[in-house]
Length: 331
Image (tube, one colour):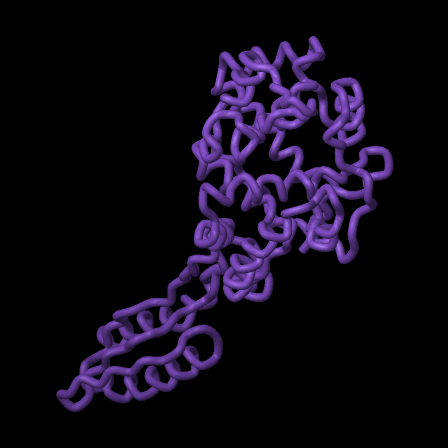
């Protein structure tokens, strides 16, 4: 008898491992080949092997003790091998997140034109974090907050990601918090920015975060620094995160290219005003407020001259942002 196949471990594309094995034995009886296939693992394979061993022993009396000894050893291997392989807990393996599944789902619905809105969604979800009481943060609560004035227009980005979520959930469940964090990173990469690794396992909030936690667009530099400080971010990190305005329709370079044009424009221009005194459509008041503070201005100059430095700092600060206030699953 020849053991033609042995048990094996296979992995799915979603990194959920499962145990799959079989044995296929070819026996010669009365001059004919008889092939037996059985599902391996546990008692069924062992019972079948013992049964075949008993039948084979009767035939082996005709072929001598040496042949019988060989076949006994072969059958023993077939019986023991499934139990020698490492055990995989299927129930816990199915809980494993595969970030490639989430990225693939996001890429199906994301375009460069939609990237800025998706990235803004990240800031407005995570931006409610408060260091003092650990409230708010990256928890998916933005889906309950779209009616707030500061979140105007974000319902479109939520609908876009909702389509991605429907497809992803058919493969593996994904929280809104994880989905938004990954989608923001994909938006940056899609527009030519740095690749940002995102840790998975955030749990969603079932209620809205407290209102009034996001920085207002009318704040000056001092007030902005105070606001970001309450969220655990330094002046440098604030300036780095502000570079996200390089994409979108704010007038800083190409609306679909993530680069350091934001900082170059801040150094080269001042917001023009119309006859009515309204600022032109180049950035927000808070963008230009950064140029009025010496500490902020120092980092603006650094990032304007060194795009690689900006990319590195933005990546690190983005990771900090999407981890802020997150509640992580323990299983």
